[in-house]
Length: 73
Image 1 (cartoon, rainbow, N blue to C red):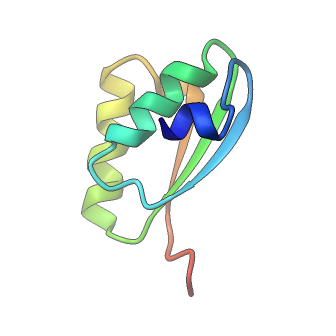
Image 2 (tube, rainbow, N blue to C red):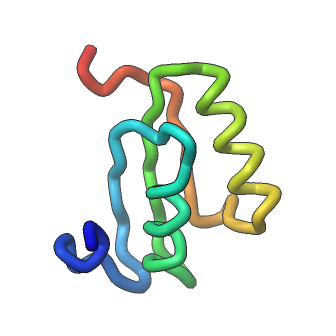
């Protein structure tokens, strides 16, 4: 529903605050393929590292930049 409400589609650039488990990130990545870009920000360093590895493992690394940063700070 979130993807639909935000009208996210192919080849868009999207900024996400709070990568978390990466579930929403994956939904965004499927929506912005084949040439979009997701910039996702995660304050937890280990979570950011795991998400980056997972995206690369799923062949989505070219569509996402994972930033280890607190967007509120």
